[in-house]
Image (cartoon, rainbow, N blue to C red; front, side, top):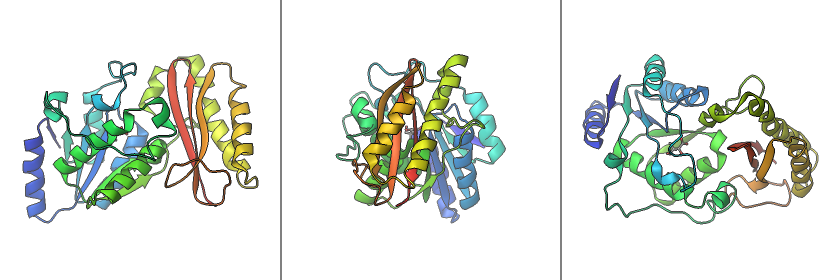
Length: 280
Ligand code: PAF
């Protein structure tokens, strides 16, 4: 496994692989890899000849008051995990390699990016779309792997690829959870022991919503019950709990089409997200 820091080194390697007819699977990450990332890398390993993982904490997707500086990093541990799964190449650029001082070109999206996480994090998806399209141009993968854990991000990337005619198959992979239900996230490391226990309110409430939506088709009723459940946890503060169309990410009144119930909840200072898909 190679670890490279420059765009040119990735391009050189990919060029050689393509000459030999190899397919390329790509897993973009911000590092501090956990079993969620592992499942993406394993899927990529199964379905492609070569696997590239990027590890880049993308400054452009963090707002000025967000956790860019504290975001956990551990390249040594990440590399060992990648190696054990059979990743072929890690791309680990410095911010200066990705963004020239006079960088001024962005990939932006309306609609899908405005609700849910986009409300509290107004510049987030512009940063995600910009860096992911840059990474797609650098790696030129056949397939790219994203977790359903970031359900809105997955919908946004699928739309960007469709709208901008990118010749890449986007593979969505299921949420990976701890044994007690908490969705795996690099940000779980911010939680104290007491907060870690309190954080279970997210997955428990997601399970409640999913169960209710089997029989209750009125979205507002389901969302109200979910909010009331979260409010029983003193350490939890709701950012949003919403039911949206699974493709457009627009709020829905009735569960009469493929939908997603999504939430962001602060546990202490840590903002956690979770979601579930609802088939109609
Ligand atoms: O999901 C993430 O870790 C990031 O948003 C991504 C897709 C790697 C872009 O920086």
